[in-house]
Image (cartoon, rainbow, N blue to C red; front, side, top):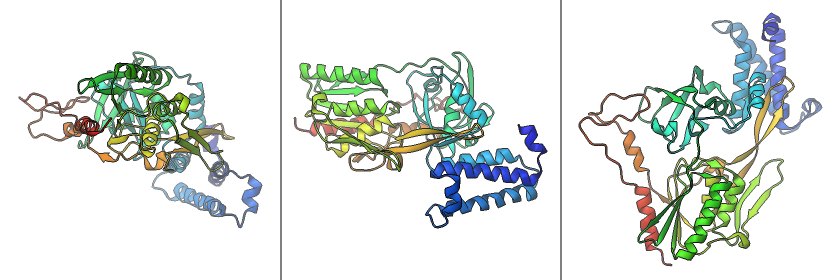
Length: 421
């Protein structure tokens, strides 16, 4: 197909490419071709006028650029940029990408990171403890500049996630940009079958505070939280600390179920979109486990998706205080649209909102008590530091590594201790 494309006259190439963009816009705006011709007075008319502008830009690129450009690559980039200008989860997949996407059966090995796109690049949201990524000292906020030879700026989120997967034992080469470090680290990792740790349970303050730490909000881990909460009632623990820092994976249905453990009534979340029937998730008193124990929830910039739904619900419904950092901001539902050329659009069609109506994807969740992460101190430059080794944090020469105090946890405990039962 590509060889045939190169044999076409330039004017025909431009017409076909402009038409492809028109097709994408038609699907994107939800109208048919007749509507495009007839909607002279519609609010969408301005968007369709841009097709002519796009065609003219393509002509200039084709005829006046310093070298003869790869027009299909230019067009793919334009379509990808169109979708990514909406949100990180909306993607354009070329026919080749979509074929690989559909053939992927999931369940492969990985390096243990949750990723999204920020600043045009793949960005790590959170890292699974004990995973290859964790052992390489990758952290939330690190930017994956490239995967193998492919720049992540030129990849949709769907393809980035696909490339990070592979068969157990296979190597993955990535270039990572870390905070306060100009040059990327080139790291080679082995893909493994990553298993999420069980829910961690810690008794604090003479066993008066139950500290629960799930790493993912799936059915199994939420069931573990439920069992521990029920056991807490029998053992006499009086206060709850729910640690949702770096919790990015899971299922929205399970997030609603987890929030319901602590709420007898009220809204947990809503899901709504332009043409998406609004869904409202309400607390069911029959599913409540503990709605009275004083409670604090810990969040950070690695708290994303389902965990943000839980945190927002407990904060807005005045059930718990939130401590930590502003969360990542991920909470939408996607739909895939097939395109005539074999490509596809993955488009966000609805977004989750907190009980107060804030879209999590747009606004994230800001805790009432902001406390910066102590781990940020580890990325600060040190004049006495040894040369950096890819995948490792440079340790000061002749100094013992210092484990920083967990300021967020300490603040949460202080607040819980001050709460009356």
